[in-house]
Amino acid sequence: MILDRYLAKQFFPIFTFAAALFVLLLSLMDLFINLVRYLNYEVPFLQIMRISLFYLPKSFSYAMPISLLFAAAYTLGDLYARNELTSIFSSGIPFWRFSMSLVFIGLMASVFSFFFDDLVVIPTLRVKNELSRRFLHQQTTENNSDVVIKARNSQLIYSVDYYDHAARVLNGVGIVELDPGGEFISLIRAPRASWNGEYWVLQNPVIYQWENGMLRTRPLPAGNSMYREHPDTFRRSAVKAEELPARDAGLLVKDLKAAGLPFVEALADYYHRFSFATASLVVMILSISMGSRFRKNILLMSLLASLVAAVVFYVMEMISMMMARLGYIPPIVGAWFPIFIFIGIGILLLRSTKT
Image 1 (cartoon, rainbow, N blue to C red):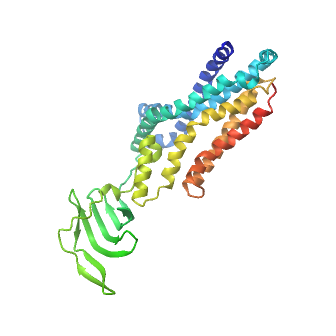
Image 2 (cartoon, rainbow, N blue to C red):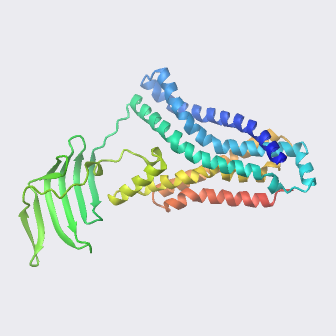
């Protein structure tokens, strides 16, 4: 339709300008937050610029919803100020039909955002974080202490005082074996266990079992090869769900659940991957509902409305995600609650928009 093409033609130049502006602001914010540490560790200027360059895709991912909101609100407000919307309404075209091209752009932007994050943002953000840790001397360790792992459908429970990842050695090992009904079968204690490439070799293991109503103790025969849980199961997880593609993040959640490790934070980040992609569609609904409300100071009011709505959205999202990661609310609620709230607000504002 001619009007759809005309609206898109008015929209995209403003969106391009807004996206470039917000990407620049977000990149500078990240740079200034870490600038003191860069100077303290005497990070070379070229490396600082390299780190900032790898942060640009993430900045664009954050900036795209804000830019869509600003561009749509400004475009509709400008058309209203030039009385072009009045002419359209007089021809019998309802406001919701005229704005459908912007809704379609928001929908396509949401789909693009999901795949852009998976294919571009995640790899570049991982490189950026690795470079930051290297030049800021932030060491990470995969050793772990006080480890409790469930394996084989919770029929084996490992309790380890300390896991040395470099040597692949478990210290202070306790292994509880349960039957399918959850009843106790045996407890094995060993001061040490080492990985030989195929299974754990227990040092001086002792087994505790019920026999004739009494708990009896005896040395476990040597050469027992039934404990084959991979060493990576016991290491401290240095991988974050937000640094993995959606498919790998889902697998990470399953692995954490199977191992009996805390998985709520990873699950919240997994759901957030999908909910954040829909932010572009949400802000389009908001911008359409408020875009025709400004008759004076269109640029200023559109920018102000965009910033206020974006700040409220991101603050609400930050709070809900923090509560979800801490387990105060279900992860799926923490990820999707701000989305549904802002969709509801957008629909309410749209119903009161003049046509």
